[in-house]
Image (cartoon, rainbow, N blue to C red; front, top):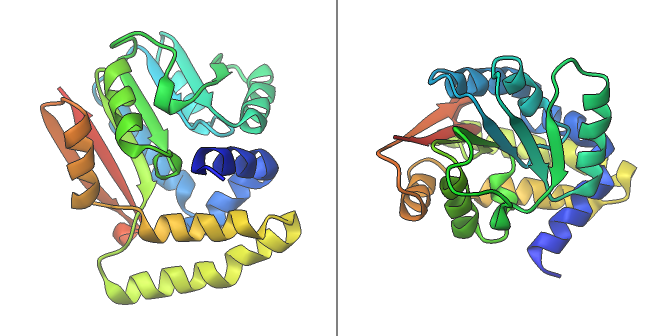
Length: 225
């Protein structure tokens, strides 16, 4: 099974538990990470934004609180978009949500002031193509993604904890393979300097930065002009 097909099916199946899963993977702190992430994105006062792998829309809604122009959230999981659209109906922040693939974004060049993606870039089947598309449609790109702490004790403790707790979700949801994938993808995905190399090779920004979060359990990356 192709990675894209597997990931789409996985997120459709676990969409109702997605926010709870992020609590576990981030040791209960992903909301604080996302707040810091959004604050960085807003420093340059963007007037439009595209949030990719939007999930249930939390980043998109937070951005819309501060952006007067269009905010669009896309995800290739229909289940995730269903949840986001349901939230949008009850929210004062009006965001457009649609099903779309990051590897083939249905937008023109530099349509958005900024594109964001949180905890989703590691799930893209062709990372180079996904980054290239982000750089094509936006004037700046900000990414929040799980990585690997450089401190070996912290890394061993963190991933050891995930191997104990995350499979419980697999038993409950009957998607053990999905939760095993989420651990493995976090443990193996290139982070920090390795990710920046791929980021730089597939986009054309003047400035790039990598910022470790919580000791390197996650990283914030951005490319701007």
